[in-house]
Image (cartoon, rainbow, N blue to C red; front, side, top):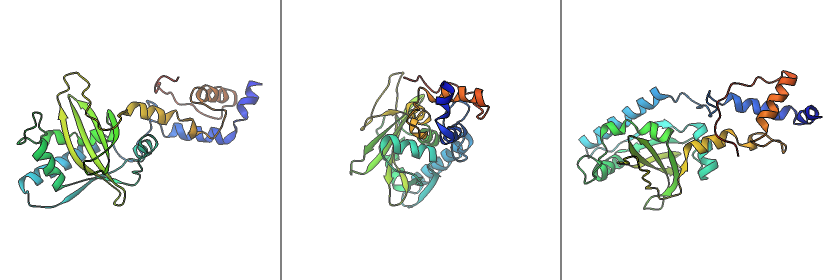
Length: 243
């Protein structure tokens, strides 16, 4: 009887579940859809750090740098959780905003925790894999995304969402001395990035069956696999507690 009930999910549910596993890494998290890895993010950091130096050394020069395209999985998670459509956009920065960072938060500013060129190297890691993320607005009223990540200090990056230009444009970057304390300077309601990723993996909507839930579809699929040898289940580490 149980096996008959399991079979009723049909091939469509099995195929879609296989697609979920295909898009996971070894930890059970969504894979990057492109070639974004630590080496790539390091190159992005060097690119914006060089642009930061360029803006400071020649303040009259106007330029814009395209840093990297928004990762497809990240775009999907941000759309589902922040209701912001950034698919197909690119992370960009221009000289004016780099000078804003220098004047407000740089080494010659009044900021007690100034942003340096070395800090700029961390930019790619902060926006690609933040600790927290929130939807916010700039003082001018534009929609923006704020990222926070603790890398010794707590770093914050704000990017303006320019839908028409398909851009996420850096507005500012600053840091605080967290000292082990969870410093929260968010204007919007922050979400834990790990929770967002776990939710993406265990989203029951990825399987079009009213019978499946995040709590039940994995054990059911494993049983079905053992009985029919139709689906190979990868070894997955727990993505988080299922309630």
